[in-house]
Length: 406
Image (tube, rainbow, N blue to C red; front, side, top):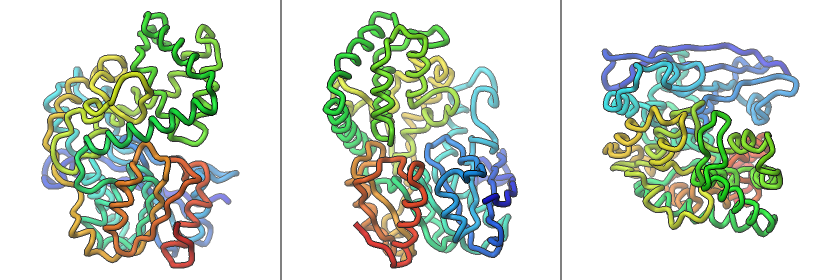
């Protein structure tokens, strides 16, 4: 299959409540199968925050879920503001050196609420009355805000591993995800009991200052522990095991370790505004750091204040990140509005998900009339990436009443 591809760009306000103020460019790529120009639209909202949409490739068509989606839809892959071919965010695109106060004010406009308003600008630009949306991980947070704020623009909604908690403080969220990751860590060591001593040896090297990044800076023990992020992903436990079975003195060890770390300079937004995506009102205050039960275990998709000290690529954003941690964020979701919207859709909640807590996702699912739920114990957080056609096919069947919930 070689689908047709059309690029779209629209200019949007940085602050949608101030249309006369500064602007950004937002990019989206339309993908249409042969003969599919009359099919309804499906907008894909990527995980993150701070990551661009996947780039479609042919022969074979990738990402894998795209081929299934094109049977029913023409697909719009949105590069969220600050990412990809939208106006990018980073030290190279901002005044140098970064001034924390104006940077923090600028980045208050990069959460799900602004991304949904950008999508609405694209919808109006394309002359679309209503469309469907598919959100993976953080993209699901955007979907929930969309249902809460602009339900009349939607035909149906799909979420994979991304139903956020409604009204719960970030401290509850991160306490739960720490516990979920701990369970996955124990499971990893049951599969690979030799890895416990190997990991300890690597941490000892880091603690002695003898483990250094490819740029020469030290790899601190707490940075090394963030490889736990891999345990929530298909193939991640194996990747961690394959790293630890290698001699740490090998020239391949550090580059392979760096590739497994969740945060870095390529997508600075991912670290800088990460905790704010869980702020359904209020101040985050480094919630992941405050709820860390101890420092003897792996961590995952948890941003800590020290990230901006230990990682040279994130150091320019340190002052900005600390101001954002003290920012009083507005609510993202309206529980009453969500309950009043009887809009078709389906969502998969992964049982072993250390990124988006299952228990809170099921609470949110109960708020959504018309949304069929699938509680899945066979996939991890990146199920859409590794088994996309099957995952999307089941969600479509659930939303249309022909599939089996579970």
